[in-house]
Image 1: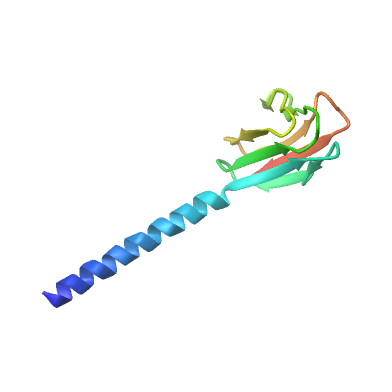
Image 2: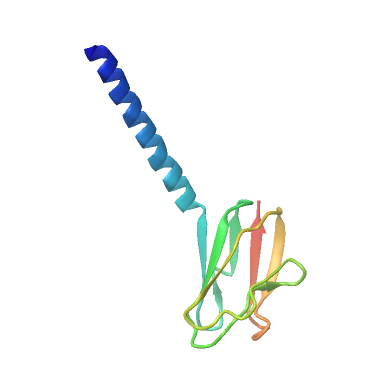
Length: 109
């Protein structure tokens, strides 16, 4: 009986550890681009298909994240965020339609 109890406890710890690994992997799949000083930082970001990117607008005015025909955040107000999860592999150039000199690239593998 003691061996059975030890095996059950070991299995419980194994499954508990697996849960922690899955949570860490899910957390690692979140990427951030900061909008600040009329720039996207980083300007180019590489992610895997299905991972989520969050654009955080730290400027005091709205911006967009727009790759024509692929994705468009609409206006992201100051202090707000926009999330996008790409489903297709590719390289996507994007701009802020409010400030077209702001440019970024999303590389999806």
